[in-house]
Length: 398
Image (cartoon, rainbow, N blue to C red; front, top):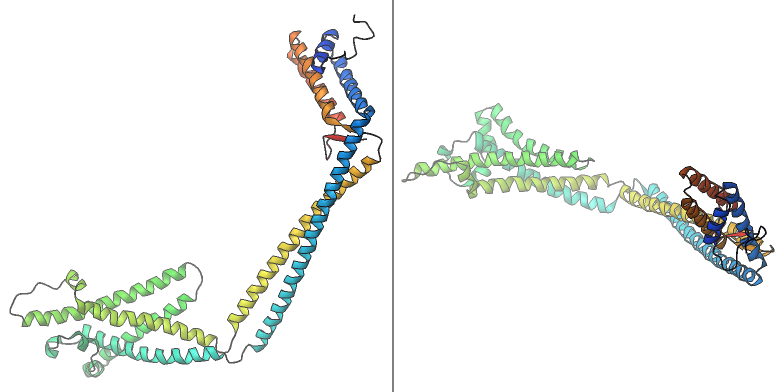
């Protein structure tokens, strides 16, 4: 029989959910009664754990196991730090060696670079021969394309008109202006090759566009010369032929081997001249400089410095982790000197069940939504007050 003395107590075998429903009905859902019973359940469950010797020993064994695990983890992290220190020292030694090498290279700067000297001589020799070739080729083709009387010459050989030995003397006979024009032709193409080299030294996307522009302009120039010479040769052949021959068009020129002979004898050699000129200039720049070697060693130093910075960053992260573990370990160690350890998990479950039972009875009693919200707020306030945020929210160390 329920009396004034036992109605507030948890009955044998009664769940906290049913306990909450019963107390709520008896107290007519009074919010102050709800708060008081939450405190009561907290104290009951807490005291039960404190009085349970077997549970206390188990919880302390769990704490000892956690401390042991933390000790092992700290040792592992310290081993990682030691390994990072060894690696960093090795990297610093390599940096010191590379800096010493860089200083030697800077001290040797200005001495004759033998490899560059050989490249310069070979490149210069080839460049002179190619320049003579291009001078003869373009002076001849310009003369043949713009001034030569093909009918008087009578030759239908494309080679004769590409390499005309009389081009300069015939131009001189025609006047100084024509001579200057013919002699300017190879200078124009050599100038384009010179520009090609310096565009290749620039940085950025515009460099590619400039190089393409120079190559395209040169190719178009060669196509015009080839078309003019081949058309004149075709005219001689058609005039001496007994049969009527079609007009010489651009489409016909594209299949004419004479056109391609002129283009390749000029354009391809011009490209080769540009490459050799670039290599020769590079060899000249390196003749009394070991700048490339210095740049290479400086790159190695920069890479090693970046690895050292990454190494230090890893060490700082590990030290932060070790410091956190040491703090948690200190809290756990202090726990073993305390009389009791209270596990919060079961207490929270009990209080949550009581709250669920109380709220279900409030719904059965047709309590207003406002009353239900007030009770829920009281529950949240008590939970935050009794279980403040801790490193390990599963247990409070007492």
